[in-house]
Length: 570
Ligand SMILES: Cc1cc2nc3c(=O)[nH]c(=O)nc-3n(C[C@H](O)[C@H](O)[C@H](O)COP(=O)(O)OP(=O)(O)OC[C@H]3O[C@@H](n4cnc5c(N)ncnc54)[C@H](O)[C@@H]3O)c2cc1C
Image 1: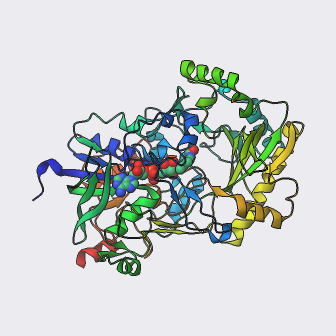
Image 2: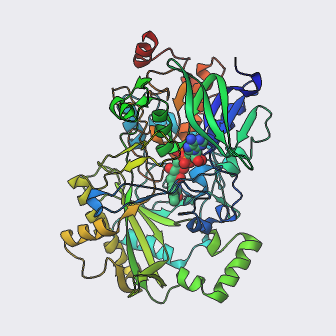
Image 3: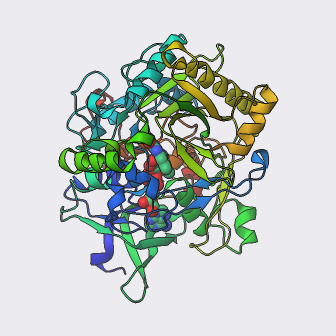
């Protein structure tokens, strides 16, 4: 019989973007005892909190799992970096802080696939509940939630950013004053998760607001290695706890549920390590199959991106801002007022557009930065006065997978993104790159341009552009979908995020997305956790105050899904 002091109503694995939000919501219910386990350490690494510091974390194992793909066949067999936060706050501590929810059609698409309760109308109240929009609430934005979201302030923006927006408008796109409002299409400012010059990670927002609650236990350095299962019910987890001198193996038990929030790589990893996944793969590794679920680790989707770097003249860029004297000024500005270069998110302005008129909604996104670099004769990157517009295909058809390599939880899983594996994905990238060039050549920017650093003037035909994309593209770091929600045989969780064929086990993070959202993926991951919290409490028979807009849609606790009924009878 497990001791009462290591038994909880809910065990959450992973204190990342979704895990922190879930812990906050569940522990508001004072009668519920919640354990939150995080493999990484505390968020004490200073660059986490300085927005421009994200550049120091891209390859830093102190806060990053530093995953990479296997050689990608369509990208000249290059391995593509897949950074993921390994720290309290997870990837919200290392991301670009751009706040984007995606399109109405993304969520309506999820609902059309059979996922009841996930239409835009259903999820908008959760986005709003999560948010504290600094400038005020309206039909699309909320106030009073833990997640701080603000507009870029005018004195924080370089003139070049506005010139890029103006140039995009000159190519026929609308100016858009709220990408998270009625329509996503057009050019404008990104909203950001920065307050007074500091990153607003989920640790600094959600967790700071709940970490002192007596019913919430947060453990860092706690790497969950497997689920403890009794037949098809999750009854707890086994984890390694980092000690000062030696690590210890620990167990925690639940009378309620285990919720996996380990993210797109680690949630399927933990399922597989626990015997839940593709029979053949598990048997090959000598793992006893507890529940055959062939979709675990499949359906990986990501946004591939390509940089177009353009030299500029006669208008300030980051290049001038990083010269010694200007940098001193920037340091002063940052530490006295939380402003200047160091307070910049990854991108301040952007564009959502259709790569082809036949697209019904925008299918490409540009992140713009007033900075550029060029390889010298030795191939080293040298900063230059210039700009970078990085453009991605928002709704790729290519699908990949993530599966464990061995039974050792510390072995990085095998990630195959299969980028550019369809003709359509290749065509979209080529057209999208051409659109960026069109924007650069619009009147608002044309007079300021010097050389195009990359791909460069010699790259003109579709074949040349595609070849450049194959050689230089990278991920914009939005992998999702490896524990897909649905009700078919390849789905991993149902619409209430319960793992098919299991009891007491859910997944709530970016891995449950059936299709990738059209934009950055942090806000959707948080929304998923917000919604999961209500479903968990409802299914435990508790009275739940649903967010405004859903109160007349109170759903009763549901019984087993068809696939769960099969498990129960097994
Ligand atoms: C460099 C970069 C820039 C990005 N920029 C943006 C942006 O500007 N805007 C945006 O919206 N999105 C951005 N994203 C994407 C976005 O941040 C992620 O999609 C989102 O944070 C994923 O949330 P999650 O909860 O699914 O996973 P995560 O936030 O990754 O959380 C998973 C957590 O689980 C922990 N964990 C994993 N396995 C275990 C285990 N076995 N035991 C215990 N703990 C475990 C991890 O350490 C981590 O803390 C960016 C991503 C990256 C990498």
